[in-house]
Amino acid sequence: MGSKTRRARGFPNQAIVDQIRAYLLERFSAPPHDAEEAVRYANMVLDRQISKASGLLSYNALLLGSFSLITHGGSNLTIQASFGSLAALVSAGILLILMWMHWGDVAEFQTPEKDLESAMRTIKWRTCLISLALLISGTATMFAMFAVAPSIAPYLRHLCT
Image 1 (cartoon, helix red, strand yellow):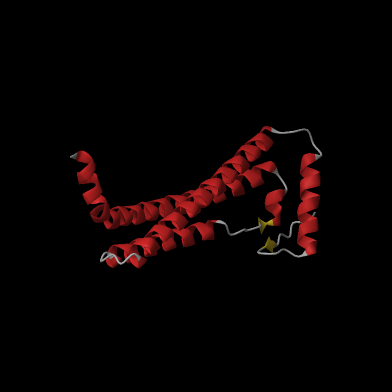
Image 2 (cartoon, helix red, strand yellow):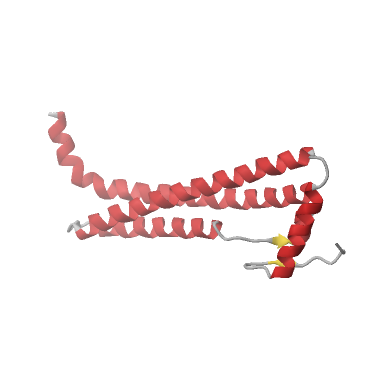
């Protein structure tokens, strides 16, 4: 295949796609290795991370909707709603960065060991992003609780009496 490696970013050209395909055909022509199972597991972890990010994006959308209702409902709590909306949007932006695709060096597809190393770097990077987005969404949730608490306090008092 040659020792020259090229980076494939964004939308790789056909020559790079053909080189990746050739590496994969070469790699899977041999009997399965233990590293192949590790790569499959790492890919499952990456899929779970995407699922978690999707759920958190949906949660942020619900938060934004609730802040919109609070603000347009004539509430005086627009500061909490504004900060909460901003936090939910920042969290969503971080999660969208997580969805960015990166092809990496084409040589990473040549062996299971290199593929596993690449997957582990991606897992680490995505884990940091999801953790940060989760903390920011938690902050947005606290702003939502502070914004809603005064509105529902009379109803809660009525239920307790």
